[in-house]
Length: 119
Image (tube, rainbow, N blue to C red; front, side, top):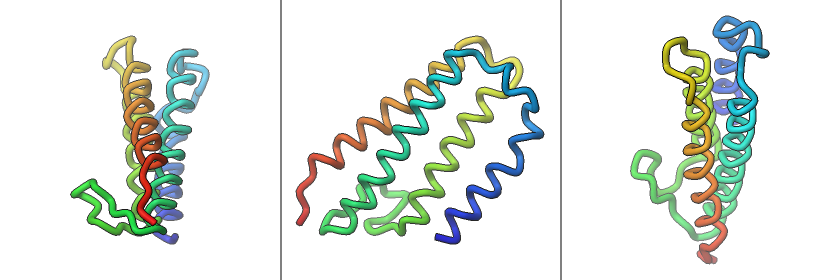
């Protein structure tokens, strides 16, 4: 759990320096980022629950039995990258699309996890 705490602390320390005025985000960015957070949280929770059974992780980067801290750290990294995309000047006006795509992928993974019966 200390890895997840460290990842969260590191992610939050840079937030103020990237964009001090949160009002600069569009409503679409706020909404898609919220959806992405919810989907990543659901994916992490269902993955951790499935790994407590006899399931194995299929992501080759994480190994077959990653720790909960590793899963949470990966999710924090993905959300941190999305945050950077939203706050990077010159990327364009459609950055919210990245959030919707990330939410769809993570949400789909959560639904897949719920369908597994590894007990």
